[in-house]
Image (cartoon, rainbow, N blue to C red; front, side, top):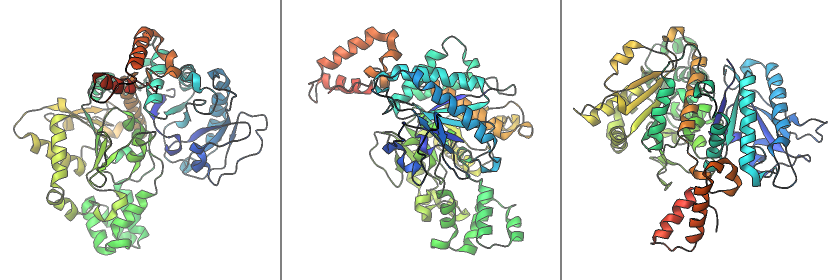
Length: 517
């Protein structure tokens, strides 16, 4: 199977992948955006007649490549950047083939190469971003179709992300979705229709994300079993005892470990927080979910990777219950606590039993969401106790009212007919692969899930946020009369005062990308 082009709204420096391209110029001038990532790296003095050069890198981090992308002026065409992209893909792929697999952040089925919208800032094309993005999408689409690598285009901010999706719509307009979002022969045949339903819910602001531990696996974080085992062994627990713990429920394992290790700075929760808190790069799944037009999310994860993915550009996110800031409605509820407040992690059996009493208000908020929105569960196993507890809240909230499976969707890797029968009154279960778990390669099925969510992102993105930005005007030539009328309307309402209809219209036009004074 060929590679795939993923598009996310995010930060190139924080993404877990195999290699990234950082744009610079002939003099290796590093802009502020990249200085933190490149701190401590040795920058070469010469390009040696190449367009890209690799920096030294450590295990478990992306290879960093610099690209000689600086151009004079602000009206460059994408053709000047195309050779840099092509050389990066060729050189980075060759270097990765020489790398040991266990040095990668995660064993993804295909190499993952990430780029930003090269040239859109100080690179020389800021006045022609529409043509730039269109050319970039043409090139990346061709690379993904002709090479056995996955490309990730990381847009920075809502406007750039929407423009990239619009350009992709133009690039693939003559071919069916099935030729761009290629699922393997084992895939669930209903994936594309399900993606459309979820995209419609997202556009209507009805989609609430429920994010489980599986989402963090692609960032290299351990499973619960591996995490508790590692903490136990590193704390001096005898290997034989650790092996006996393996057969216990995770909550009971945590209860025993806390009893042995104690609490406070040297206790279990502090050690768990320290292990998870070292993760600096978020997964592609985090990026895809954070790019959806969903303003509400709930997670049982302790790590802060979704927060990192959801707060790039000028996006803000309130994290409940610890940081209920004003973010115009974007928030994440962390039901089991966070690594930055380890004392309040919900980890042991007693912690879970105390939740209804200590966090009743939070559970009430979840119940309200479960009744009013469409829930999308990602990264949960149907056997997880976390998942069962969340679904118990669904049933408790709805009482005798029959809502049915149309109000919730859970995305799984493999199919289980008995699980579907068990949950038929609560959930629409959408497996990525039609076969049973024992016949499924989990890493391949997980990639299918990422391709599926990339399709949901594509279908749920509109052109609104860049529509009136003149630097993207080439992407909306087919709507030029409407854009011209709205530009005239922007001029007519420029001096509108608060409390007037003109002021309301002015605020709306800002949402369409109007940046005139």
